[in-house]
Image 1 (tube, rainbow, N blue to C red):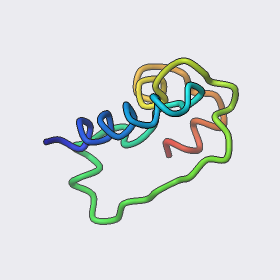
Image 2: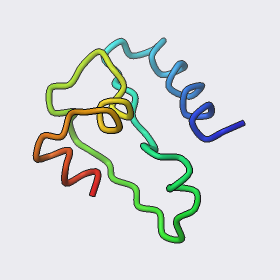
Image 3: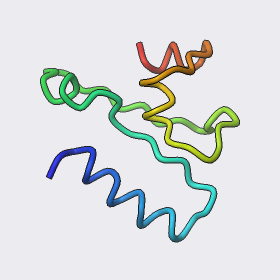
Image 4: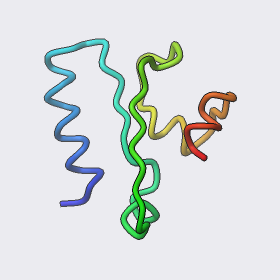
Length: 72
């Protein structure tokens, strides 16, 4: 089972308990798994982003200054 599938399974459980939960996680699984050093960033807030998946947001488009720093 891929990392993305494991994240999705975990997030599905969390979404049943918290309707305001915003999924996040590894943006690029291949790059992440090939990296020797893996960095985990824990965000206090979601910068007003609700109703979607932050992984897709960061991979496919939105690049406000906060998210640019996170993805660097």
